[in-house]
Length: 404
Image (tube, rainbow, N blue to C red; front, side, top):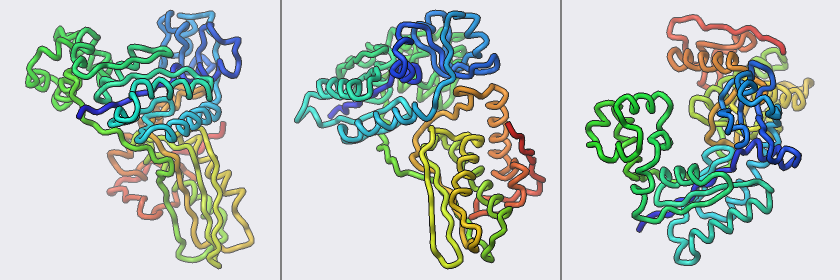
């Protein structure tokens, strides 16, 4: 039996939320992102895209292309709230839901045709989301995730499309090979240099030829171009989390030691998130005192995996939780409400320079170990919960604190 896979995408999500909050923005070119010249466009309305402005572009260049654009710094917390609102609706309505990012979802509706028409059900689901959130959303439906996603991208904005079983290859054939989700800019240029510009060009070539040029990626590209994709919809679990705890050898009230330990754990957990291509929407801190009484506190945050967002929030929770009169036995940090997501430091206020710094730090950690780069304030935390790996004989790179 063919699967029925639904892909849903909130159209220009950040812009749409801003327009819901301020309807005077409707119909006008809008950019959300860093407001300074060194900022980066995080989202662009379709009106702005007509001027060749796109996400990831320098805000300075975007202003040159579209000088009449309205530029908004944005509010990550509000966007996260709307993302959760849509997630809750979908969790109640579909049997298997995958949250691919803050504004993108997959659902497996296989077998529901016995009780409902899947396409009609998806249309009603889309109406429900739009009515309850006021946000536009598009969907594509097909037998697998690749074709469903391409269908969504082709029918946007604010529309819907079903690719009938058996027509997948014909649907993909005339499209630019760039429309295949795995094809980035570099791969696209490589293929163009070989005269491969359309999906049909890939379909017509032997699998071995593409593999000889692109290796394993070539095999994956050939399969996707031929509408072959058996990847499952991975069910979304909101309570999925990562955490770390430290039990001290001797109960302590040393505030400096406690803060160093907490900050080091938070630093390592954010690195883990980025390494796995994840972002978290909830931060928790736990303290266990010498009498074994335990208290914890958590708060929702805008989905992130950025040190400069996560660590201050962790420290804020610790400060509000800690009773300085009692000896502490254990401290812990947990990040939950985890979902897939690109780590985008550039959203709203950060610069390419900041983003490049984090990428560089993580590359060093990937090669030499998670504690090969650390903040000066966490330098003393050499071994926490088994996470602090040895330096393999190399001294760590220490980053001094810089206050904003």
